[in-house]
Structure formats: C-alpha cells, structure tokens
Length: 296
Image 1 (cartoon, rainbow, N blue to C red):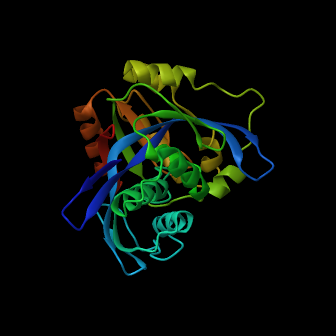
Image 2: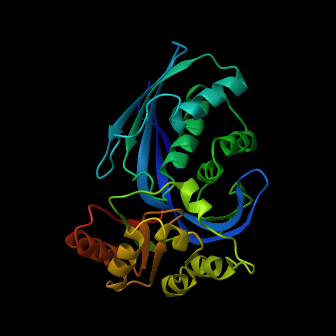
C-alpha cells in the first residue's frame, strides 16, 4: 500500500488488489476455517481510502465508484470493513477522535482480488498515522487478523507465502511481472466456495511458484500456477468454464482463478502483452478487464 499526506487536513492510502499465484487447501479446522498455503502478490490495481481526522468522535464513511467497479452493494456503516477497522482501532487504543472517510472503489467485489481486506488494512494504517497513535506494526497485524484472514498481508509490501488461515506471513522475493485480470458479471461467496472444496490427501507445494516468481520467470510461473478452489467454483458458476475458454484463446504464459473467484488472471510476458490480452478480452464482451504490473 502507499500511504501519503494529501494536504494539511487529509491523508490518503492506495490499497492494492492481490492475485493468488498458488492456493492449496490443507485441512478443515475445528474453528470453521481452513488451513491453507497460498502465494499472494499485490498488483497495480488500487482502491483509495481518503481520511480527514476531526474531533467529532464520529466516523463517517462515503463510498464512491471508480472506473469499472460498482458500489451498489457496498454498505457505508458497521458492515463495511473500513468502518470496522477504524472502530476496532479506536476501541483498542481508547482514541475518541473522529474522521470523514471516503472509499473510492476500483477493485471489483466478490472477485477473489482482496479488495475489502486491502481497504481494511489501509484504514488501520491511515487512522493510526493520522490520529498520531503510533501503534506498533506487530500489534497492528494482530488486530488486522481479527478483521479477516487476508488483512495482515496487505500491511506488508510485496509478495508473500501465507499459511494458517492466511495470517501467518512469510515474505517472498520477486515481482516485476505483468498480468491481465478479468472479472465476469457474476461473483461468488467465499464461504460457499470453501463449502464445496475438499482438501486433498496429498497437498501440493508452493515452492515451484515461489521460485519462479523470485526469478521473475513468467513462463515457469505460468506452469506452476495452481488453485485448489477453482474446481469448487466451477461447480457453482458457469462463468469459470467460460473464462477458462476465453483465456485459453490468448497467448498467455498461464492462467487461473484468483482466490475464491470469480476473477481470473493470465501471466503475461510484459505489460504490452497484458494490454493486448486485455483488449482482446474486452472485444469478447467482458466489461471488467485490467492490464497490470506489480503494486508499487
């Protein structure tokens, strides 16, 4: 994420989307979560959180639509992770300050791209900074894990292998690759996808994907892509097979679904290649298509 001061009164955070370059489901846990191993990579597709601190004692959120992302189903109250993150911070620190917060959505929702989790991490970081709370990074990560499994990942920079339910983070080297990302008109519930997924007897390892990413080897990464949730998602939505067929027609190094879907991505040789693939997908009738590099 990129946190910066806009002016004397306003702070901003650019909150990136992520791709799951590898995703294995290891086991179902007694607490209802799943043990996973995933290689996540932040990409250059961002929501923006604008934060104006004040002394009102109230947190007011306004949601706005960026390009190619709707906000019709996005609440602006305590159901929104941005509000929940800020209120959790206030509760744990005893802070009684308020804020006007504006969330500009560009990352598609229900896509497996982590937009909500990234927004929550951004809200924690910017509120701590703007209110001068000075919360230690380790403590902020701990609180982030209470908000969602992916949230701690977004407080870091760069790719990482995430284990446990996603909150145990090991930074991974590499980056600099380009991707085409496409989200169909229909989303999927993460919980529903997990309900239809069976952990394997012999799990796969993320090591080949981690090594390929570390070398910046697009061809090797394309061969190492894997997502255990993809077959479960395919049983729930016809869009999964449609996207497979669409991306198979493109000259990509590899492609798969990200997270619990429904967004797919393709590994490209360079950004120009990603832009060409994005134009072809747009010509096929897909409305939410992005050519991206890694997050800055």
